[in-house]
Image 1 (cartoon, rainbow, N blue to C red):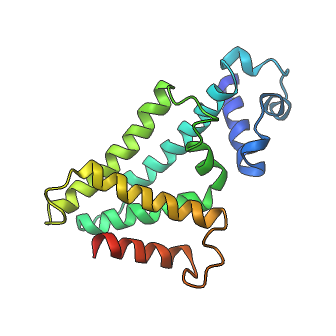
Image 2 (cartoon, rainbow, N blue to C red):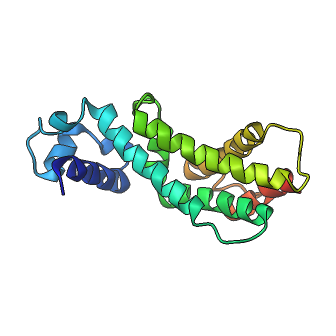
Length: 185
């Protein structure tokens, strides 16, 4: 394993264990057992290193999507929505990092490529459901954006306590069921 990969692995582990705030260049170097300047030999700074870590998160999310079970377009879209929420709840720090534009480099080419691929995959699932006469005249990317925003908001509200104690949302899955029913009827 190369030094660059080791630094990304170490940063991802620190992120999972201690959250976004713990992932500093000095902390990563210490945990990786390298000099405090070593990360800067492989990355232009913290944002570049965190972008590489966030790219891994998007890659994992894409892998979950491409591994969806066979079924109708609607069933596949619902499975993808469940996969998104499951990913967020199982990986809260990674989920946070992936969308923290203040911590990553939004212009990072690989991050942009993989995150776009995730959205394009999701939009294609939406378009497949549209073929079954679900909002057939609406731009599938707009529908996908709206549904994604709802999923993201649900995950974020759950993770940061906005819904966790609400009597009307006893679990993230029940809240997701209502969201999907509102969208897909």
